[in-house]
Every structure is written in C-alpha cells, then in structure tokens.
Length: 122
Length: 286
Image (cartoon, rainbow over the protein chains, first blue to last red):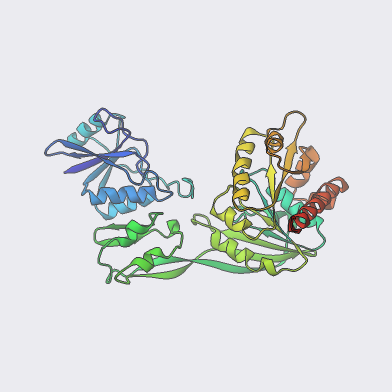
C-alpha cells in the first residue's frame, strides 16, 4: 500500500512539513517494495484551495494513507470521499513516522481544522 | 463627484475619514464597501433601511451526465472542484463565480445556481444616503456586493459620493475604486502603515487615478508616512492629530464633525481641497 507524507525537502532525511496543502513536496512510500518517490506539490503556489488540490494529488496517486501533522476540513472531505485514511504524525522525522505507520502505532488525525480560507491571499 | 477612501492596512482611519467627509458635505451618499466588516452605519444609524439580497453563481453538478473528464477540476485556479471516487465535489465557498467550469464541461453536466452571499442595506441619516454592503461570513469574494453598491453611481448628479473601501489592494478594492474620480489614501505613522500605503499607492498609480494622502494619527516627531509622501512628491491634503478627544468621539460612535467645530473645520477643508483637486484634474492640461 502507498502512504504519503508532506515533506520539506526531496530527501529521505527530511522532516515532515508542518502544512499539508502548502507542503513543497510529498513523499510517496510503497510499503511492500519499500520504494520512495518524491512528487512536487503543484498546489503550493495556488491562490486558494491548496488543501483541496493537494488532496486531489493524493487521490490521483492512489494513496491509501496520509501521514500529516494537520489537515483542513476541505482537504479532509476529498480524502474521506476517496477512502484515504489520515494519520497524525508523531515526530518530525519522516523515517520514524514510516516505521510507526508500519507498526500500526500512529493515531488517526482527529482534530481537523477549519482551514485558512481566504487568508492565503485572494 | 466620487471620492474613494482607501488604505492598505485596516484600522488606519478609512471609516473615520469617509464618515466625516460625507457628514461635512451638505448632500452626500456614503457607500460602505468594506463588506467584510462594514461599520460606517454605526456612526450614521440610518433610518428607513431597505434590504436587498445579493447572490452569486455557483456550479451544480448532475452526476448522471458527468463522465469524470476533469476539465473543470484542472481549469479552476481556486481549486473549488475535486474529483474522487467517480464523483465531482464542489466547494461553494471557494468558488469565485467565474463560470469557466460550466462553459468548459463537454457533457453539460454543470449548471449555475444562485447562492445568497450577503446583502445591501440602503437608508437615510438626515439628508445623507447611507448604503452598506454586508458579505456573509466564509464567502470567498465580496465583489458582487460591491458591484451592486456602485452600479449607477456615475449617474448620481451634483452629489458627493464617498466610497469607504475595504482594506488592502486586492480585487474588492479595485472594484471599489474603479469609477472613483479621486482616491484619498489614509496613512498612519508606522512602518507597517507605510508598507501598506505603498501598496495602495501602487494600485492608484496603476489605475491612473488622481490621488492625495491624509495623514492620520499624527504625533510630534518623525512620521514615516510623511517621509514616504515627501520622497515621492505625493500631495498631503490633511493632517489629523492623534488626539484623545477624537478617539473618544469615535469610540462612542459619534461623528466628529457634528460634535466639534474643530473637526468640522478639518473635514470641511479636506472636502474643499478634494473638490479643487478634482476640478483641477478635470481641466485639460495644455
């Protein structure tokens, strides 16, 4: 199964990005093959609705689970509609979160925030 | 004559200047285009208020026709559409009502529907007409409300129209100053204030509008907003002191020109200066 993490750099040693919609890159990790790929987040510079677009990218990459420190309600609506599970990252390290995900110790993300609509500049 | 009052930053004194300028004029229309937080009505307390609902268009999908081509999703630069699990999701509150998705849909699965986004109130305060735009919380854009507020203002004869603009320099401000004869930029003496003054300065230059600056909250000592103006040969039309009595009047929702001769003089002369400036601009230069 494919898991995705918003990240700051295109490097396995990178940290989890504090934002989902405005993360510069996503790490897509295939749990069976242990293969990692980095994709650019084309929503990064969008004037609005970045969370929705980022969630669409998750859907289009057939991701099964998203590991993220936070997620807004619009993004969450798209992800849930596609059956993508949202887990809360528990540390800054990408590697630790992947391991925790494999062990099944990551909690589901429950505090979906109301978003920052209109505060990204119209 | 249509005077737009704007400032890059909120809390600079747009409403103070707009309200008092309208009150200083004998016959005026005050239009509150600060639709996210209109507060001119708190001062004017208009009577005989009539309300009109304002709508904008949002797309509605008919799932039986949608074939998932995603042309609409890829087109929308505000990301108001997503396609997952063989279904199109529309986020109304993000939609800017451009209508592009409806035009592009090859299956005609999208249609436009009216959605109420706010209202316009029109009332009287003595001899003044008071118009207020109110955008519902969470809506993407107040532009349709401002369009309604300002429709036909070019046809109002002999009257002073004061347009109290929203803060910033984005679409809703551009819409608010579009038909203005003159722009008054209100600035406060802080570095943040100067940064935002520079934004609206660029905007009025881009729109090729005649303009001048009102320095509000003036204190003794250096005023960075004044320095900004002097460096660029920008006309300073008025200096309003940072005073306790003006602050007190305003916080009690009193109109300073109706309460204090000193402020009546300040805003009447500002109005005179603006009228002169507009006439001067209207005279063809050889």
